[in-house]
Image (cartoon, rainbow, N blue to C red; front, side, top):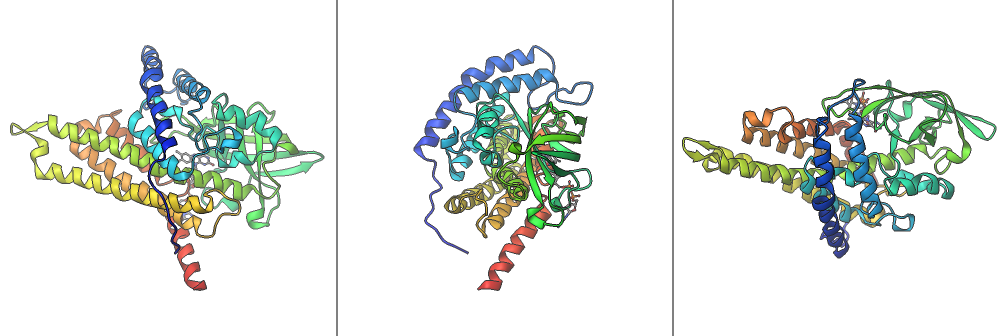
Length: 416
Ligand SMILES: Cc1cc2nc3c(=O)[nH]c(=O)nc-3n(C[C@H](O)[C@H](O)[C@H](O)COP(=O)(O)OP(=O)(O)OC[C@H]3O[C@@H](n4cnc5c(N)ncnc54)[C@H](O)[C@@H]3O)c2cc1C
């Protein structure tokens, strides 16, 4: 294992950014939230669905409005390189930003103001200059949205076993296949599609293509309803979808590395997300323990409730510490470099599994403190418990993270 001098403190520019973000959340978002409430279509955190099971279009449009406004104020993409139009923040800075946004927004509409999977991502930074102008800049400004199309009905973890393939035809490529469990599949303007271009070439067998949503032959399939109940995850079908070679990201054969940079980004985002939501749930549990009475006394006087809250604090602290230390170490190497530093996968996986599992236990305790109210459908505790359970599967299951940690340690032991 390596040692570096690392700083995990928030920088002055994080402070400046979160001050601006706070003003945006406090001043710009509430009127949009009030407007949304008039339509009786649910909330951003608990949207109603349309007849096809998708997020209600009015909720989606409210989120889009927040994204466009945040983009115009340069709040939406702090994680993207400054020379490409983003904020240029490193991973430690992003932990602090994400923690702030999730803590301050809870499950509110304001959460949409920070790019999530529909926004620009490390893989999109590798677009050619022409593609950047067409896709990356509008993504950074919140003017369009994207989706990452990697997983398939028959292939999840086993990415290199994917079946969607692309064949060269003159200066174009033709894509055929199906994708599944794609977040934002219903609404995206552009898809980052990973397909086989050289069968049998291992980690060089895949290529990433940018595919416009209105390309002939591309069909948005049905919603795949999950316990998240957000109407955002669905299928895509590609039937002879013709894409010009200029829509290839980086080079033919770089698709696996690009897919991993997208996936690793989502893994690292768990740190700030779990810390922010974790603190929000702890604060809510403390308030509840002071208000709710049993035998004439606040339940917070009971040791059983105190221990539940103390355990929530333990989960939060260990997960947050892991995130900050791991991301500081990754900042020394470049968290999304291609090729990636050989020790990076172990650290990224460690961060993900510790945060996902700690947050799951924390969310479970939050429900226990709230009693039946914590089980109430649509309450923050109930919703975040479902979110927490979900986290252990997307962007690589917990088992796959353990594989990466063990692989890293055993390789290190073999060379020492
Ligand atoms: C809400 C949600 C959003 C998603 N969004 C996207 C998206 O935007 N884009 C996208 O491309 N995908 C997306 N996914 C798909 C997600 O990345 C996959 O679900 C995930 O990679 C796991 O694949 P799987 O579900 O097919 O499970 P499987 O691969 O079928 O795994 C099943 C079980 O076997 C275990 N397993 C499988 N292989 C191994 C192995 N080699 N070693 C150890 N254990 C193993 C797993 O840990 C798991 O327990 C999303 C999924 C969900 C639920």
